[in-house]
Length: 489
Length: 42
Image: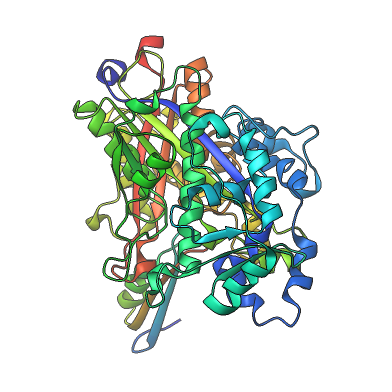
């Protein structure tokens, strides 16, 4: 019954997910910035807890993010995960790569079109040499070049005389400095611009990965891009005005692209995927890219808990993704636009009403129940980041709520809640990068499973904490059913 | 607990019970809800 209706639906043609290991930028995260200035020896306290690139690369959740480990392998991985690295962990996986900091600083410099970021001479040269040899964003990729760096003295002068934000390594070495875009505009402060630049660099890297895949869209065929990150690009007259989508497309060499930013806190990726699907389904666009960059503000968000428990600060990576939504190709998984779960205004705040609106009601429109979904992807925040800070296991809480709905709907017995969670859920493996962690990190895994037949149907749900902006007490939510292409049946 | 006539601050969590849901429960028990907030820990 559902297969016939799925014919002609938009499909997820490809997914790219990237990480950038940036231990030196942890001290510039919103929480560390506030807390470290109150500590007598901030760097001395923080530095021993910052991981090496090898440590971050071999971290099992990051290997799941790249697609090298499955969620089921992670569920069986010995804990704590940070004490059990993956042997021979690869920098690259089927979904993307984890970039080391020296190269990422080069990406930042490459993404800066206003010469506000200056790197120290040796740092810039190291970044240039490494990035120029990169197989995807290398010298011949067409990306903007990395300009030669400045002497440490010249950068110090930018800091002391011009109020630039210094970028320092964990051992205090000066890596570079970021100038403000305007002396009297808080939305163009050096901190805000560095955050926005980090988004552009990670989103651009993800887009470059997506477009480098075999059979990928030609850059000139990218016509519309939705960005759904958490940054606010703008000026004092239009805070959050945008448009990061277009900025990332420009950086990646997509000369015929335009786009826009979709805002809904961590729910924005689901809104953007839905909108991308509708543009394709309506034939307004043949192909649409959905992308997002990482949140520098959320680096080290729970670092106090990590210090307290004598563990590494594992919120030391920025994340980004890019998704190609296109017309039905008879192979790629379809997005069921005819069964979208929406948290409406009238859905309110009662947990049961919310989960019904997001899960059982859209499934019911297709004559399905929760038991017809092989895997639910929802808040995928890594519990190893949140639990030491007392913030709980967010995915597990949400999976239990979902299982409770299954009990209420008499689909499973109360005793089967744990089995439901184990079979249809997954351990959280995403960096606590807000919008990134909202279901999307499983999309690469889901796409592989839905194509090879190990999965038939998945459900992706994003939730957004709109109340944090103080304009409504409501949260937000959207769920999308993504299932095996009916032509493969 | 008798909440009738008591001033209540309703603190909720997005992934648990949100603030407005806590507030509704408190109001139905006769409390005067003076502040409603929801936290998000991620």
